[in-house]
Amino acid sequence: SKSQFRKVVIAAMSPEKTILVSTHQVHDVESIVDHVVIINRSDVLMADTVDNILAANPQYASTESRIDLETLYTDIIAK
Image 1 (tube, helix red, strand yellow):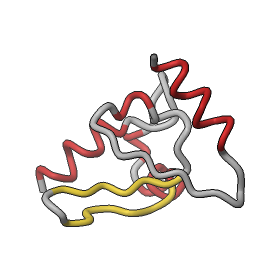
Image 2 (cartoon, helix red, strand yellow; image 1 turned 45 degrees about the vertical axis):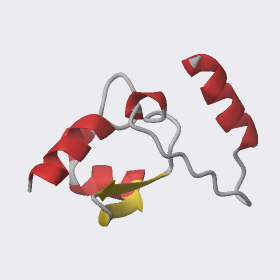
Image 3 (spheres, rainbow, N blue to C red; image 1 turned 90 degrees about the vertical axis):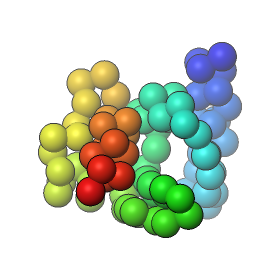
């Protein structure tokens, strides 16, 4: 379940670890990620911290989670 997935990831998080999650279900990770890499057709379109993305693009802040990754992704691949 979404809740169980989040609990496992949060429990594994630490400054010494990198946890890579590849998903199309971005709403499952929006509130827990620190860094975002957006890849489309093998091209890295964006790679940055959530804080930097939100500082440059405040329209992607979400009231439901920390960042609206679905809209960010859709906007970036449309360029």
